[in-house]
Length: 132
Image (cartoon, rainbow, N blue to C red; front, side):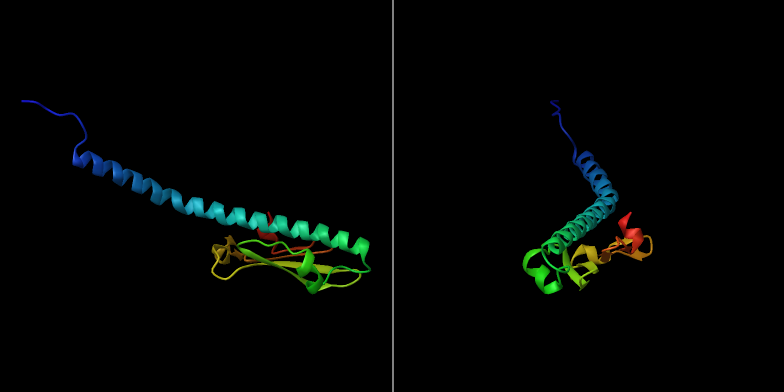
């Protein structure tokens, strides 16, 4: 009798089940790292906007307002919207907010929601847990 070599259907199904189980276990960690990476990109955007505000003040008498910044300074990101909450001659406050429908809406560090981050002229960051 001639026996052929190869995998049986049961061996193939066991292999597929093991791969599916590994993917099921790995996906939550992977998606968490993706969300954290997007938050880090948003923080980097806030720091860049902070530098742009200082450059603007060198050339003008005050910091850029939302209207002035939207034309020139505000970064454009897929998951976040940047804004200038307050600006005058001596102070500004910047904010980044997760866009609706973005996975960043569910971003948390412990019990602290990280979908909205703020940074001001004095380098005060909120919520602080999201910046670490």
